[in-house]
Length: 223
Ligand SMILES: Nc1ncnc2c1ncn2[C@@H]1O[C@H](COP(=O)(O)OP(=O)(O)O)[C@@H](O)[C@H]1O
Ligand SMILES: [Mg+2]
Image 1 (cartoon, rainbow, N blue to C red):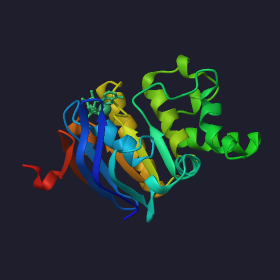
Image 2: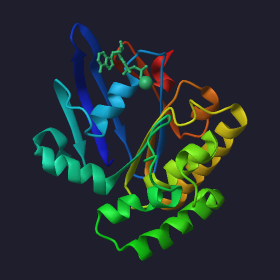
Image 3: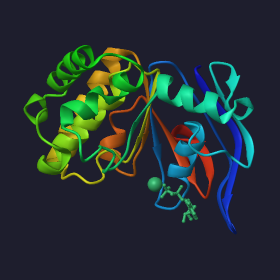
Image 4: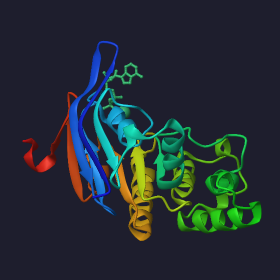
């Protein structure tokens, strides 16, 4: 197991978004986090990935308690070991798609030529090499998500966190994006935590976890 969360609690004012959620993720597995709108899926993902600090409970990554890390160390962990794909809007609009994909390597100190050569390979893998010279605003939603996936994977993270990655796409584009996301994640050996409320998307996972009113249950035990 590389990631373990237990008894997570998180409130926003009077709203208890999480009330005792927990789950474990094994290396290389694809886990779908499902549940109705407002049930706490995004909050759970943000706590698991160190974006949000829970009010209670623990998140342990490879034996390290995220809550015990300094902000600086937690940011470094997110940058080096985690990859993120959101519903939309995560690309930097001023950069070309190629520059967006190269960005994580550039931030890690890799030279421009090497970073962009690697980014080109990733764009080809996601079948979106034609978007490389364009800016995110000039490509389709499906292309933008494939660019975002390339960017999430380029630094070889151990875990990808994806929050409704097909939520802004039509069915056909969503299928294409899920096929490419799941096959590239399988090829890289990364784990994928996939938030979705669409059974069609969850079908790409090894296992489903259901979130309801801020609590989690394995799909197998949820009925
Ligand atoms: N930043 C926030 N400020 C206030 N309330 C929030 C915030 N984020 C989430 N919530 C509330 O917490 C609950 C769970 O939200 P969320 O985790 O986004 O659910 P989901 O992703 O399952 O739709 C909802 O009631 C939502 O309104
Ligand atoms: Mg959400």
